[in-house]
Each structure stands twice: as C-alpha cells, then as structure tokens.
Length: 213
Length: 193
Image 1 (cartoon, each protein chain N blue to C red):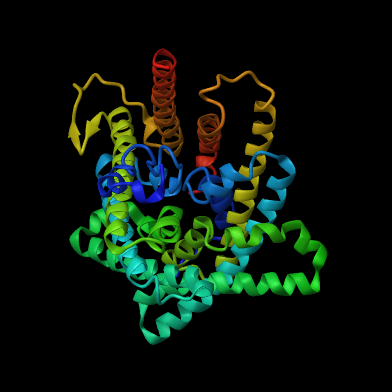
Image 2 (cartoon, rainbow over the protein chains, first blue to last red):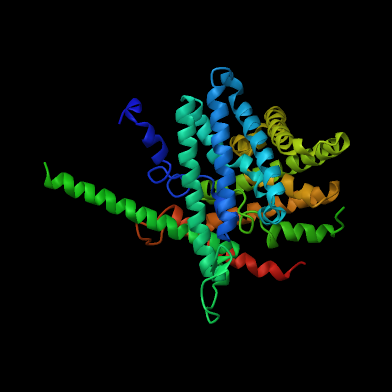
C-alpha cells in the first residue's frame, strides 16, 4: 500500500493491533515487564507513556522544519525529557503511593525506545494531525499491552484485580507471577498468543487466495 | 547518606538485584546481542565501562544541581551529559587505544542512552550513595549485567541446536529462558539484606 493511501483512521488503528508496539514491534520492553506486576501500576505507566508519546509527537512534528538534521536526536531527547519531568511531578502530586511503587520507572520513560522511535520514524516526517493520531494509537496500544500483562500477573500472582480479591480464600496464588520472572513468562505467553493468531490469519488469507484465483 | 558496606553494595547490584533479571533494565541489548557468546562478552565489557563513566557523571551533576537547588533539571541533564561524555570517551579511546576501541567501539553508541545506564544514575542518586559507594555500585551493576548476558548467550547457543516449535522460536523462547534465569537468580535473595 502506498504511503499516501493510508487513511487517517488507519494511522490510529495500526498501533492497536497490526503494529502494536509491545507485542509486534517488541519495543519498550523494560517498562512493560518491570511495572506490570499489578494492573493499576500497568495502567498508570501506560497512560504516562501515552501522554509523553502524544506530546513529544506534537512538539517534534510542529518543530520538524526548524530542527537541523544533524542535531535532531539531541533535540528530540530534550523535548522528551521535559515532558517526562512534567509527568514525574504530576504523578507525585496525584498519588505519592503510586509514585513510590513505580519508583524510577517514570523517569525511565525518557529512555523508552518506543518514544524516540516514533519521533524519529513518524512525527519528524508527518503533519501535526497525523503525528497526534499516531501517538494516540501507539499510546493506546502500549497501554493495552501493559494492562493485559498486568491483569494476567495480578490475577495469577495475587488472586485479585485492581486490588479487589477475585477468588475464595482457598485459591493458591502463583507467587512467581508477581516476581520478576513472572513478567518474562506472561510476556512470552502473550507473544505466543499474538503470533499464533497472526499465523492463523495469514493461513486463512492464503487459502482464500487459492480458492478464488 | 547511605552507609551500607561496599561489599554488600557490590553483591546487591551484581546478584540480588541484578539489573537485567530483577529490574528489567537493558533488555534491548540483552535480547539483541545475546545470540553469540563472543559478542556477549564484549557487550558486557562495554556496558560495564559506560556504567562507570555514567556513575561518575551523575555524581558530579547531582552535586552541581544540589548547589543551585534545581532538582527538576535532573532527568534532562543526566541524559545529555552522560550521552555526550560517552561520545567524548569514545573519541579518546579511538585515538589512544585503537585495539580496545575495535573490541567494544561499535557497541558504545548503542548503549549511551540505554535504560540500564540511565537507571544506574537514577538509583545511585535516589539511594544517596557517596562517590566511592556509587563507583562500587556501578562496578557491581556492570558485572551483573555482563554475567546475565554471558549466561543467556551460553543457553541460547545450545538452544539453537534444540528442536523448538516454529512458533516459539526467537523472542518467545528467549523470554522463557530469561524467566527461568531470573527465577534461579532469586536464589541469591538470602545473601544480603
């Protein structure tokens, strides 16, 4: 498909499934695994990252004609770091407890390769509107991916969801899921599921092509 | 000020709270460069080296920011100063010791803004380590990273010869191996406080 034929809705939707940042592009793994031990942590991290993604997309796209090519990466990092500092202080103001449980990982959004990747690969080459849609799509895709990992880990690891207990007391929790290794296992499981669905989709398309010559 | 002993800081950073397997920092190079044992060793060396540089940088920046009372500039100044210092060291290395540069030079640009490096700078600040403690912390973190990378590369070289289902091959298999490694590192939890 040619670049200019991509519709504006597609710009948004592609981040949700086809080019999902976590499950398909496997970008931004560090925060995806580190803070997804409970669903609420995963949700906060996803929203914070989405905010930085959209705002840096807007800034980079608006300034794309003024930033010299040689200094572009440094400029992008400055822009991203400013928004991350803002998010860090906002979360600290809203809930100190949440800020403490996320630890340094809010500040670490600045080195999330997803954000710099979108700034370099998309926002620096496209108009403001498209950059916003792309940022929103990728942000929502990232948040959902984190939430799925977080939900699995919290249900299996603590037997609860968003802090509410789900099972009767006899449920034996899988402690390993809240520990770091659980992050690797939950991520591997989701990757397998996504890969399996994609492989099936591809197989169906091939059969349709064979039937209708 | 933190007054933990140097030895316990080292063990803590290298084994108990291993940067890759417990904090999930630096996963990109961990999965990207762990296919071959030889490159893994070089990458481990390069990361340890950059960690030392970053630790010294972060310590000095923190002193400066405290002096002018501007903690909100921390994130932006850390990342810029660390990235440019690594570039500078890279040029120096190229001039002074071309052999060392050839051994780990190609990895240096890749890891300047790696999350393990940036995370180290943030953690040492949050914990209030002094100069020597920060240095030992960086040594431990680097050693832990190199250890995890080398172990992973060893397992993956064997895994290449094993009969793995096509769907699992690649990233999912690497993730599962990392999960098991991480689980075994949990055995170190009793070592320190």
